[in-house]
Amino acid sequence: MARIRNFYAGPAALPTEVLEEARDELLEFAGCGVSVLETSHRSKEFDQVHNDAIGLVKELIGLDDSYHVLLLQGGASMQFALVPMNFLPEGGSADYIVTGAWSQKAVKEARGIGNVRIAADSESDGVFTAIPKQDQLDLDSGAAYCHLTSNNTIFGTQWSAFPDTGGVPIVADMSSDILSYRFDPKPFGLIYAGAQKNLGPSGVTLVIVRQDMLDRCSGSLPTMLSYKTHADKNSLYNTPPSFGIYLMNKVLNWIKRNGGVDGIEKINAEKAKRLYDAIDDSDGFYRNSISAGDRSKMNVVFRLPNEDLEKQFVAEGLAVGLVGIKGHRSVGGIRVSIYNANRLDAVEEIVSFMNNFSEKKR
Image 1: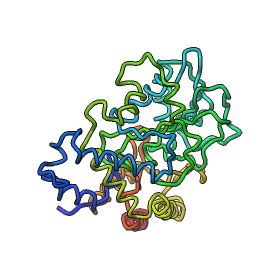
Image 2: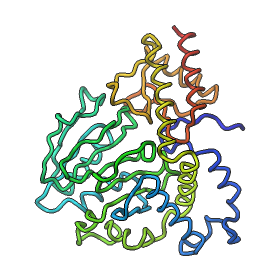
Image 3: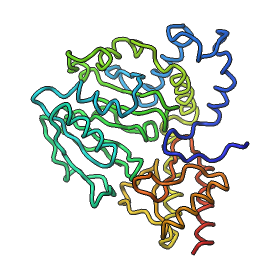
Image 4: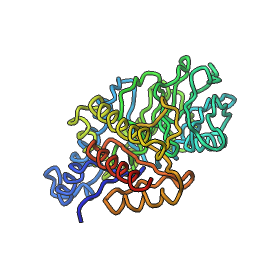
């Protein structure tokens, strides 16, 4: 069957040409006579793939030599615990900015390990429709770090400008918007991101950690739970998720070929504009309640006049080849995830569907 438009929130769409390259190399890659699924993670062929991926992350983001790039497992959810285990000292505290369900989960894990201060919480009546402004943050200058979630896949909010923490290192969960826009990495002590939205398939977790943070790692952790272990061994202390890293390397190369982060950011801005224009120009048929400056460019959420129409929207969308547009089960509604691999023509197609649907159902 023909491929359809994939708007799932994650695992999400991968670039078609990346999938085609992987298909063509599945039985044999790099002239080594075996599949990348079969080769040793210690082989020179895989070593090239592994180090190329690390180098591309550094190049695309603009990281200097003070940063280590780790390719781990366990997802972002594992980092919820590993961050405080490694960096929250006994008797110290860390600031957490709560802007959605994933930052709430990060807080829950951290509280089981040490002292957590809530620097801001933007929840209102069970939902999150805004990102806190700088003057709304209660930051502690002595905090071990300040944790935030850069983009919120469920509620559709995103930081447009990161907070000034006064030199306290920012720890960021960037799972759903990493490499979708340019940002200054210098204020960040650690960034983590599950690969399955903008980087590749599920199973790989990107961790970017600054050397001064590694120098503070707890020395009493089990070996596999220490970031220092993985930095010292170039993420090869144990068998890595090699096929996921192989695909991630291809996605990173695809981003580079498409203008790098700056080129991707320009397209992402246009994609988001067209979707939000379709919502705002619908005379209230489609409704998005997020503050204008806090709207996500990755996960566009909206409601229709009633739930019956939302069910029809999802069903009729699927019938014309638009999959993954049902809102998260906890909030309902519609969610269109437009990560890097969803190109402008995919957004144009769903905007056309939205316009036609609203005309028919009014």
